[in-house]
Image 1 (cartoon, rainbow, N blue to C red):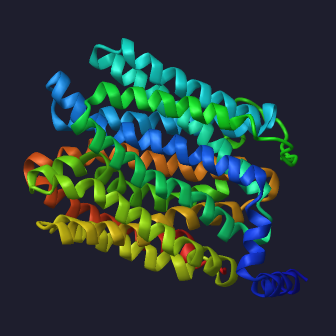
Image 2 (cartoon, rainbow, N blue to C red):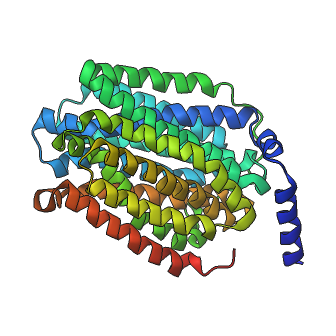
Length: 404
């Protein structure tokens, strides 16, 4: 019987046209949540990419410590995701999203009073915590408003907002900080955070999440053990992405490519936007392996090309490859996590995947920042390329042999 149901589902997926799939996905709440995610993540990346250089210049600290000031946002994001899975069982996705947006807006306002390195760390942690709460809520809400048989395409479309944010955030951050200064940049960040709250009021009539409140002190209430093994892949792959976010402006300045650094993220977003609908459909119809193996290998290639980039063309080529590889790893990885659990555990599955995802991004700049004085930026990115190749092996061991 399970095999018969699987064949029927595949037939329905194949028969649905792309237009019919979009019509089933792109409805009111989906569009509202996607718009909030776009603005929130644009704000997040704007702070993340410019924060390292600002802290180093203002406080005269080492690259590793300055990188940690950005990485601690991701650690805060991880903590926010961890507590949100079970809280959605108590108060629902809508209130969790509101709480995350309010905390993020308050943390941006608190930057006015952060005049020392410890206060900067606290402010960045709280900003990341707010993003983690709101981001987990948006991911869980999307999982419920998108029909199950279109999860690959729907989640791919939703995560395209994060890919676009990764282009807009660094582009605006680098451009505006050079032209108007960091203070103006933070004022813009505050305006965007308030805009997210304004859009939130249009989120209405969400479907029931079928969640039940679980024991507060039980780890199973926050993460799903079935997703942990698969999420180890993200822990190995994501440090490379984190080091690109934290150190690309400095790497580009060292090679005289400052102007191309912001365009790098536009190339990343363009490649992601063009390929995610196709990879989402491939996941829905042919399973995850046909997407994941190429995505991981292309991510490793992107890091290698970046390590050798001494011209604008090579730098932008690395951005395109990263958009084809890492961006699709992220979207399909979330869809795989949901496929491993029942509908009532979507919040915990999303939390588990992004805990490991954010942990890899957050630790990457601090751990590999120590390699820069010894091997330079090029040596660091080459080592990260090798690490992603190891991630292909990890994927094969923990999930690649699993029937699709």
